[in-house]
Image (cartoon, rainbow, N blue to C red; front, top):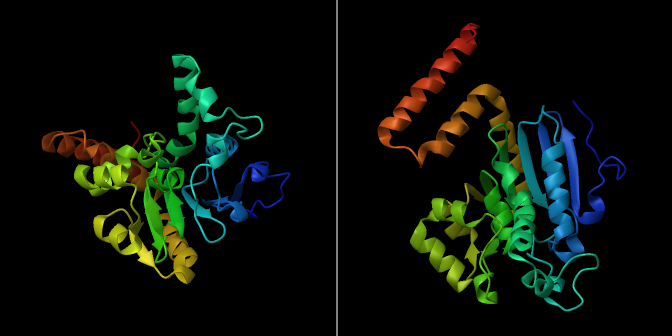
Length: 268
């Protein structure tokens, strides 16, 4: 078993609010600025993107968590001020950018939210307290969500005159349906644990004191299955929405043929 990575020299992203620990086939990514309720910044997004690029190939399951009372209170509000965040462009400066520059900048931010659904990984978000805006979308970036009974999701972007642009709109719509997704985003209202579990937004809701244990139990269950079978199944399910019934049956047959031959030791 690999020793957890806790040395700041070995985990260089801590200064930007992200800590990575590796324990064999499990990686734990922690938002580690609890005094700021894990408010997000472009520096945090760059750190999260780097974590995704640099994960060892041995990692099969990634657990995302937030330190402190809140998973993430969303975007650092300094981005809305004239002073901004030192070294980063504020919203007024972004708005004044050329189209290509602005598009590329937002795409670079989105990278922090997209790698969690890679086919070679299964990702779990353990969410407590507030998960607002960018925090909500980061939880949506994961494959699975375990929530504490005190969780409060909210998509505040529309209330601020913006749109959710960190890759959260598609998974939200897939999880709860178009009408409910529109209502959640357009009103910016709070979604608690009971509703999250009932609508499929959360896989499981547990008392706050049990959140870490429940998420790790789920990770252990995922690690118990053969990796190749989990990857094939994830790819099948990810593509199901874009296929017809017959196309999905065909994809199942092709995937199963690969599995049977792999298990029998028969190459291509």
